[in-house]
Image (tube, rainbow, N blue to C red):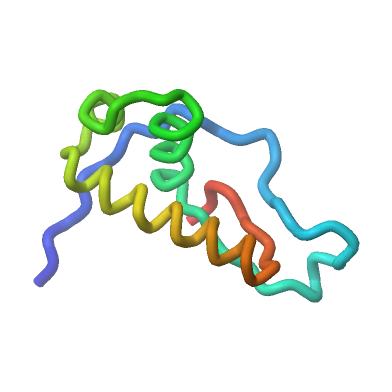
Length: 92
């Protein structure tokens, strides 16, 4: 049986919930879902330039967990941009 997830501290709530390619209706696009913890990790490490160890402490998780979350988030964003998908932010 898998270990239960520890609650993560999420302090950022976006004002918008979708990013999509211009000129294509949302109903015609595939969607990539960026989880709240992935968005928080991207914000802390990439937008605010906080070191992973400090960002992990802010989120109350280990650095290795933060690293896995960041890897997943960056891959989702890159694939969505390359494949022209919509990105839904912060909803499970």
